[in-house]
View 1 (cartoon, rainbow, N blue to C red):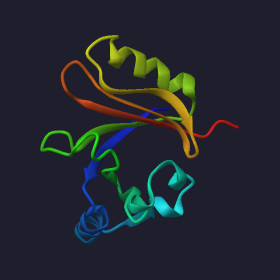
View 2 (view 1 turned 135 degrees about the vertical axis):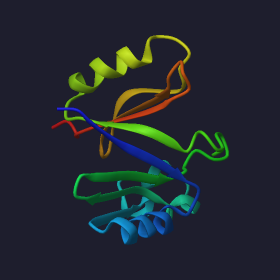
View 3 (view 1 turned 180 degrees about the vertical axis):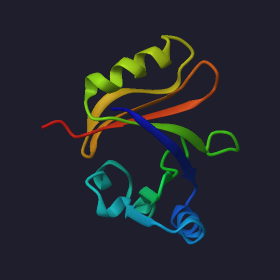
View 4 (view 1 turned 90 degrees about the horizontal axis):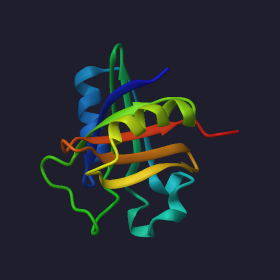
Length: 140
């Protein structure tokens, strides 16, 4: 079953911001640095202290976040630091919605659904300029 949560992109201050939100909302906060993840070899060592995944859950409130990893190729500016995060289990479950939202045209920053060390991943900006990020479970 698919569900969505806000996904925030920070530029080096993800841990600080998510800690603040945790103080405001309570609940449980998980922070994972890039250097502590299986993704560390995919990016340069100067990014290893950045947060690759932050997740706050407090009752019905969920917020996911990361530090910006795309610089200098793609810089954070107001308007591109927020996404809708679609989470599911299987490739097929995700691809049905991914393909409909993508609508075949005008997709900036397109990354087709593909397997990464943490699971299935894909992203794009749709024809309306909305950023969508998809994540699924690691295939067995």
